[in-house]
Image (cartoon, rainbow, N blue to C red; front, top):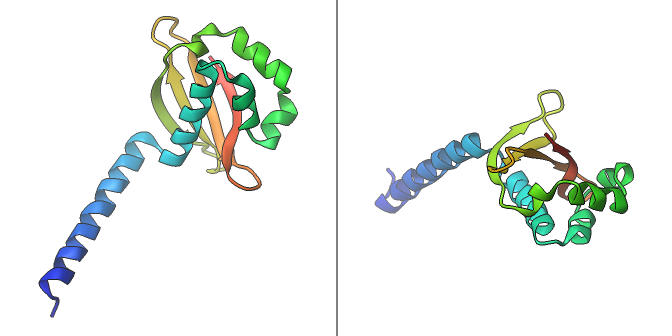
Length: 129
């Protein structure tokens, strides 16, 4: 039969997996959220060049650095604290994750789109609503 140590280990493993599943459902994939959080923190701290450099090749091809800096400048709420709302997988591809954040005073929303790049997950796009 199982030893007490083996039994305890299996129980701990089961509890850990169940709690991880619960967290993933509530907030989406934590890797995508972490990437979008870091991206927005760079913008808020005035490091727009670093934020742009951290994006995917696809992002850079449709939004050049000057256009990105102009977009950030035209939306001063991005320099304020934004609150994470939700992370949702793209219904069609199941590859991209849309991470939504809201700024309380302006009631504006920024959606950071995260997905795979050639070597890692990166910001693929950004929408302001």
